[in-house]
Amino acid sequence: MTLKRRVVYASGTDVLYSKQKHRQTFSLRTMSSELEKAMLTIVQIFHKYSRQKCKLKKADLKDLINNEMSQFVLKIQDKDTLDLLFSDLDQNGDREIDFQEFIPLIAMVTSACHDLFMTEQNH
Ligand SMILES: [Ca+2]
Image (tube, rainbow, N blue to C red; front, side):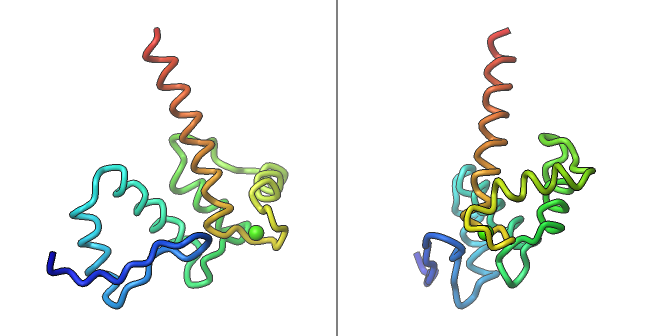
């Protein structure tokens, strides 16, 4: 492999670091399995909405869910629903959602999809 990867997978909000980020992200995509591509997509979508700060504000979370998860999750239309979801995800109470706090949402929705898929398979 000629690609000089300088990729560090770390916990928390550290996701991918590289000197040539775009080229290496492309290379990671082309060489990755379908599951790994899905993981990269989750990272990229999170960063699309969290931007440089790597944390989602309440409005960012609402936009992400309404724009990127609308087939799986009902659109958030009222403040109470958003407040409840946000406070559930914001484990450290800093009024922002970092990547580590965001992943349980993906896990919950994916798990619900799995349950639905299995129910449909069994009927
Ligand atoms: Ca937080």
